[in-house]
Image 1 (cartoon, one colour):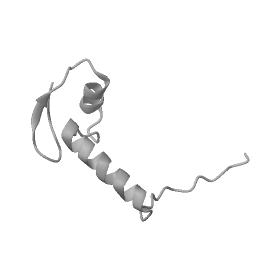
Image 2: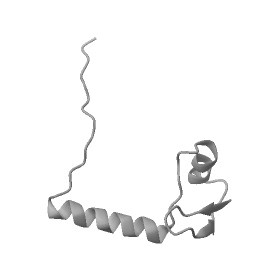
Image 3: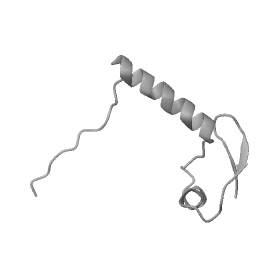
Image 4: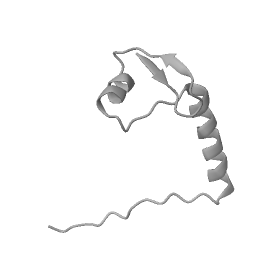
Length: 66
């Protein structure tokens, strides 16, 4: 399966039988990032977390007693 990286527009081939390929085929919201871009984003995110200025906004889970 041919896929295109969202950030750098690099075209790569991935195995069509993998879980990632299935997700890309069946769910259009899933996007593909190549390994160098994925590592770069992960490194920058970890550096931001280490500074202490990184806030992850998650929705609050309301506990329902029902």
